[in-house]
Length: 412
Ligand SMILES: NC(=O)c1ccc[n+]([C@@H]2O[C@H](COP(=O)([O-])OP(=O)(O)OC[C@H]3O[C@@H](n4cnc5c(N)ncnc54)[C@H](O)[C@@H]3O)[C@@H](O)[C@H]2O)c1
Image 1 (cartoon, rainbow, N blue to C red):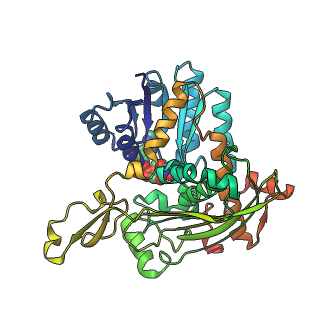
Image 2 (cartoon, protein in one colour):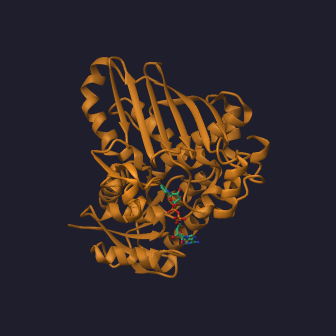
Image 3 (tube, rainbow, N blue to C red):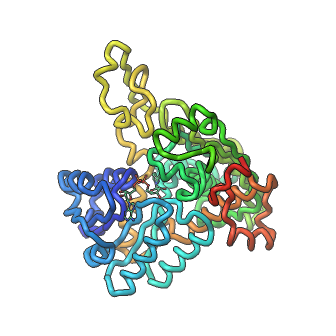
């Protein structure tokens, strides 16, 4: 079977998830790696699991000569710079044909638009990686409810949430580097999956027109003196100077252009979810039917009592962002599959090998960035944003949220 030869830029947390996903596929090989750190461990793991040579390259230009696709898994503040380098390698004659980019496509619309333009100029196939759309639970509920939807009509309300206790690396906490707080980091997931599940079966990804956005956000936990100090000591980030939101919620209203029907997607994202660990929650309500997904509900529960607690293994091997090592633990056995990483990689491999864009191309990632920016704008202006207004559309093109500019104290 032909395999897509992938070269990864970045060898950190998400690259680890992707390698654990790729090893479950027959259609991908980890051919190359380029990163500032973490590459030895990741390459060793990949070779041990027969995922490919995982050759470490000192430059993107050199790696580009040996792969079919380049995957951008490095921090958000490097996105554009790295994409410029990827485009330069292509212009210089490297034969790779596709580029994959983790969410968010850009920290704001201008960055995301430039990334889309670079890929188009270089005629590259693109895959915007939004794993939650590929979750088997999401895809299966859509298939199962398709005949019901055809008889009763599409969903009218969906609620999506991604929540945990806070990110693992300092750059995520720095709003100027990451792009904001939890809305920039995880709101993009909830907004995308909300739009996706509301879309009537068989219609294109952007069929439903987003017409308005409201959003409220706060700094509920990590702005308190005790937690600010913890952040300063552990991550070197001073939320007294450059805070970002640790909670955001909002509603996006969509219009069906064929029927005029309005439907709504609510999103809720937080970094102050002091529960077991990462929770993805989605539900949808249609006329006479519904679905619900909660990734903390596992068929496997493990109990570790106080007397046995000193023998605990690494708690994060039980669940991403796990906060507890004893008591009744919810354990997931295959998180790379549960969260959709396996299926998004499979889609990218099959699409690129067939010479087409992936199911979610970069242009779709740009639309999600626009909705995230509209949410920041709504929270900053304390107004519902009318996305049909030409002035708003123009403002969004150059909008950089105050929090992203490091002026979070003015708005939180
Ligand atoms: N889909 C998801 O749920 C999900 C989860 C986590 C992260 N992400 C996204 O993945 C991206 C990476 O996040 P992460 O958690 O893996 O970050 P990380 O900090 O754990 O890893 C970043 C990696 O990039 C490398 N790097 C840094 N500067 C570099 C440079 N100049 N050139 C090459 N490599 C460089 C680092 O050495 C490291 O290996 C982010 O955009 C993030 O938003 C997505």
